[in-house]
Image 1 (cartoon, rainbow, N blue to C red):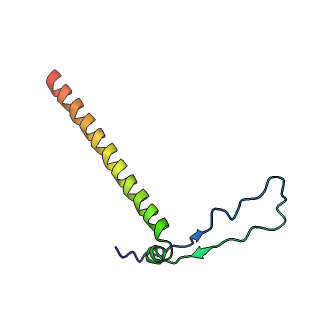
Image 2 (cartoon, one colour):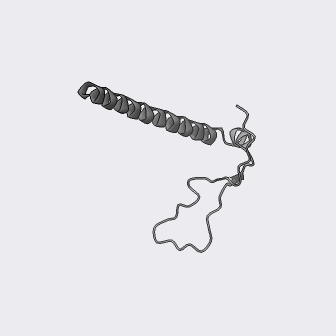
Image 3 (cartoon, one colour):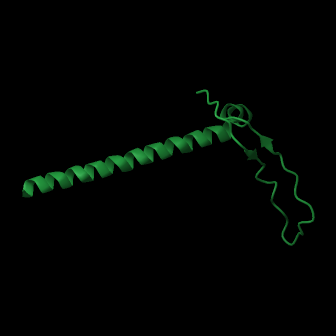
Length: 87
């Protein structure tokens, strides 16, 4: 899949960058390993695990919406059948 839609701003940081010892003061921010990407293709190349997680999340949302719409359609069809049987 070749996405060329530009991504305005994505910053990928190390999850340990913001961890501090208890009672420590925030005198200076912890160093971070930020990566800036300009497109989904760039993200796929620079951070394949994050790209994969994003794509899986999108796919899961599509499946969930499809399932929800199918259930709603089934419900409407049952209601229609019930209404026709009463008439």
